[in-house]
Length: 242
Image (tube, rainbow, N blue to C red; front, side, top):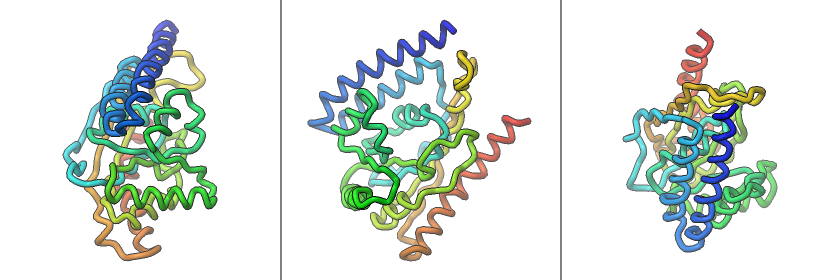
């Protein structure tokens, strides 16, 4: 109980401190806001919760061009994790509810991150077009193709938006597995897991230029991302249930 309370207090402090710095930097440079404020926020928050990160295949990340990183989503700790480990400037595709979060939503908005309602509205269509236009010359994009958190860790059905963006933009797609966030704190218990480890694994970039155009190519891309992530998800589930 004491450790949990301490983690919450530190989380509030770090979010406020790095959030203020992010608000100062973001209007002038999203790159500085991400690499200085957001990255240190992620690292500080993970430290506050006693979380260690283990990374595999870090070298799979392209450093010389924009890319789309697609990750499985099971916990709010996923956001802290990719904030802490991605070494270059990026923008995230988030649900609009994030805008209501103090500091996190404010910094994200000022920094030009992308917000969608996921209802197929014309506003979402405009945002997709903006992402496609920006990513060809701008920073990489991070998104969760499931669109929401999976409570048991298993992959949910993928939304089509991220794959459409990738095909239209013509940039590589890197699947990223994040595992362990859901085990740090059970929603029904006021205690922390004493062995807090989040595993991160990057997979080979997928060259979308080699895929067919249109719906067929988008479906092949979706199958490739799921084919990379799902075996690893099932492996971790089997380990937890053994």
